[in-house]
Length: 452
Image (cartoon, rainbow, N blue to C red; front, side, top):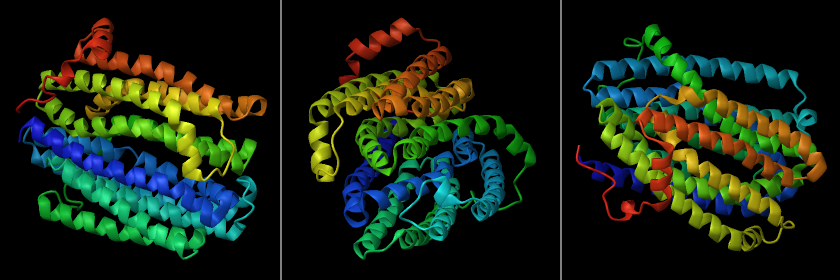
């Protein structure tokens, strides 16, 4: 297939996923507020944020293995791809068992409701919900492994479509539970049952698509795990850092300012993250093609994808920030049925932070897709951890607005470091990059793809 065909298919699958995400985010907030109220919904967000750290991380190995398998298949090395697949499956399965045991022990020892300031939901129910959601996440890690098979054999769009369809089914069942006035425990159980069922379907279809990529122990190798360990460990830093910035911030705000402040922040975060998700739609479409082109040593394709998509996302982000600056408060008011008082300063600060993130996201994808991301790991972890500490210190003085300011300050160094490493990898310069980013309009008239 041509690069054009693959990008169109990938974009279409990601567009469907974005529509699913938008639907879930737009409907979930007012729905939860209506059926559960601010207090219970805020506590649900706090409880679910803990196991969701795992879902954002996917333990690193699955994502690194997907890149590695894609590059190997592009070179015709099926045996090597199978070795990576089985090695990572064995490792993640063993780690998942260990994580489950640790959470079981932790919930037995800790006083969850006191530690997390949970009042509406009881202690025993809080512990039960956490364990159910941990099981939900660990099954999801298996689904992530199975999805690497789709990407490796050039069917990223198909695998992405299946994964997003599964998300839509799971959310629809959750809506039904809320509609039937189910509590947090019932909702968690329904999520777990749906995740198990959809994961089985994803595995079954992956085996039919590529029978040679099958689960097992015969081709698993400790040496393969060791080879992938360093990039996988570095990969963990990014989803865990994202968890610190997203879910971790919810915990900090809940502890310092209470559950009502969590709802305000979470609502604004959902709106401003929409900008980041729009850009992710394009970047994720190019990810598997960057891996394949890099595996074939086609740096001309890699460079073109990076430059063109960076320019597109710059203008897309600028337009989105402008529109949300004018209409953001109105959207939130209608969306939440005026459930809380608006904070214009916080909204603007979070929009600027999201736009800064957009500016370095394409370069980040370039490094991730080629397993070159170790170069920026320390900077990312430092920036995100600092955001939590600074927010904890500044919120008692200036409230939620301090969170928005901290978010911007922590995005700026990542912009400089990430783009700089990407340009070094491509042997390009900052002046050339900035010139094309702002003034080059060739992406409107010249193709973003070429035949492979």
